[in-house]
Structure formats: C-alpha cells, structure tokens
Image 1 (tube, helix red, strand yellow):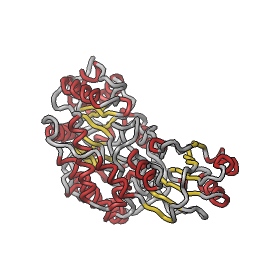
Image 2: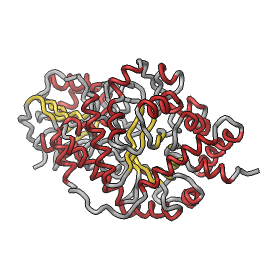
Image 3: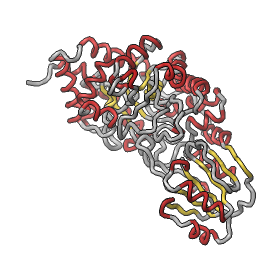
Length: 484
C-alpha cells in the first residue's frame, strides 16, 4: 500500500530538499507541486545569475510559493560567488568595523541580489558569539566575541535582509561559538550552565527576535544541562521551552542539515532525525546538500510512519507545516527589487576592516607565500588570498608542514616575503614556519582567518582582514601597496 496522500503532503510541507546540478530535475519540480516546502541552492546549483533565475522560475512553476533558500553569508561562506569569492566581507570584518548601518546596508545589498534571482530565504546571518579561538566552523562567520556587539550587528543584518523581502534565518541556536568541534563531522559539546548561555550566547538571538527575524536555525550541538546526550535540534527544552516560551519566538524553526553527523549519527539516519526534530519543535527540516527523490521519499515515509504509529503527534506536524506555509506566504516573490546598491559597497567595507600592526615598509615586489588551509564543509572550496589582485608579482602556494624556511628564503633572493594564511594559530606547522621565516628574513604576515591571540615574533607587520572573501583579498593587497 502507498502512503496516505494527505499525510504524505503534510510531511512534504516540512521539508527543505536540494537537487544536483544547474537545472532542477523533473523530480525536484514534481515534488514541489506535490507539496514539498522548497529547496536549498548550493554552489553546484550556481553557474551564473541568468541560470539561477531560470532555476528558481522553474521551481515556482511547480508551485508559486515554493521556498528557495541559500547560504549567502558574505565573506567566507558564499554560494553565488563560489567560483571567485564574495564581493562582500563577512561578519567578522563587519563586526571589526562596528558600524551598524554599514552591516544593514551590506545585508540589504546581499538580499537585493537574492531577491532579483528569485531566492526567498537566506540561511544567514550567523549570530554565534565566537568565544573559542580554536572554533573550526564559525570563526570569521561571527561578528565577534562580544555578545553586545554581536547582538547589535545580528539585528542589523536581519533588518537589512528583510527590508528587501528576503527572510533571514539566524543561526545556530542556542549558540555554536564556543565549540571546538565541527558538527558536520561529529556532535560538539558545550558543557556550560544555562545561565552562561543566557549571558554569553543568547543575547544575539534575543536581538534578532526583537528585530522580527522570520526564521531561526537549530544547532547540532550538545548542551548537557538542556539537551542531555542529544543535539539541540532534538531538544524540546531548547526549541520549545527556551526559544519559544522564554524568548518568545513565533517564527519558523529551521534545522541545520540533517545529513550532518551531529544529527544523523545521533538519530541513526536522516529519516529518524527528521522525526526527532519535528517532535522536538522544529518546523522546516533541511535535509542536506546530497539529496535525490529517493531520500526525500524515505524521509517522508519515516514521518508518515511515525504519525501513523503514534510516535509523532499529527497536530505537531500540522503546526510545523503551518509555520512553514506562513514563511512562504511572507516571502512570496513580488518581482525584482526596486533598487540595488552599489557593487563597490562590499569592497569599501572590506577596506575599513583591515587592521595593521607594525610597519608596512620596504614591500617593493615581494615574494608572496600562501599557506594551504583546508576549507570547511560550510565554506566549500572557494578561491581566496591575494593572488587575484597581484599584478605581475611572484606567488607560491605551499603546505606549511612540508616546507623548508631556508628554501623559501633562497626563492625570495633578498626580496621581502609576504606570508598569507588563514587561522595561522591553529594551522598545522603554520606558526612554526612563520616564526622561522621571520627570524631570518623580512616578513609581513596577512591573516585572513580568525586572528586569535597568537602573534609571531620578529615580523615587520601583521595585517588582519577578518575574512578571506574576494573583497577582503583586494583590501589586503591595497593596504600592502601591491595594487598600483
């Protein structure tokens, strides 16, 4: 026997799927027509603006109020500009500038671009307070380590996006900034009292709720005092008692991708994870990036089975589908935005964020050395560094643990050396290599990741960009005088 059609459509109304390639396959559009809440676009779905607009139009042909979501944070996490790097700095740079109106304008510009392409939900901003320098997944995606500053800029980002009709989804509740593990690969633990969460991690969520954020995303993190052994995504204490009742959020709760190990391993698969998330109070379930029709039908069957055998209350699923439908009604595209902001905005903002410690002298025709740094799953493989902005200068790319400092010195042949890195304080071999180079040669360091507290000894200058977007790279090259 097939699934009950009414229950199947109800279950579909809680799911945010995805599809491979630049053109929505027939099954992706058919599922939208059959009640699927929507799809998330990833870098593999993006080739150019005209193609993206055609894709969203094809999805709307399935159903006019389909949700089309994307992770377009600016900075290090971009889908629209994954081939080149974002023309906007990310949150850490905006937090460093600390101009709330600038943050609002940058997010309004990002939102205007999304709206023009038919994208209705931005899975941004990241509002986590990055209090752990070793955090491997948040870092420059955060506005900073100060809850007050992060709260102010988080609210401004939400206002900017939603002013142009794109729903903001603040993430990751109740706060991913103190973790030293990546929930894409495991279940991180934040073993603190709820009182510390309220003081350190939750103020930005209170601010975005006050600013009218239409959606909030859950975190696949374990907070033992609230969630027990499971992630926040499966915790009624977090999603209902804390988020809804204590903080008064009435919008749509969206899960982080259920294919992530922090959720899937904890539940025994994506299907069981979907059931547990709905039972806990989530409304819209992000299945993940690697999705096909079979996976969607599997998750639907799990939800319908749980409703049928009483493990999942039908009224809870109806409530979830209702909140998702309300989000879709709010963001329904009304055409292209009336105005877009200057393309120069992001580059101007990135310039304001650059911080220089030391003296930028004697940098005529340096050897530029970029240290390899692995990308997180959230970031994807996006180009970064000074390379795209250098005019005829020699650049080498190396692995820190595989490089002899003396060999680089010989290659430089007396020229100054500019070392470009990301998160040098936690890059294997990075700190040792920079210290060894600086002890023997004239070295300037450009840190394009989360800067941390570590500073190398003996360098002529330390330049911090607070991000590795295309805009950040250009700003650093200009500050060093490498763009004439």
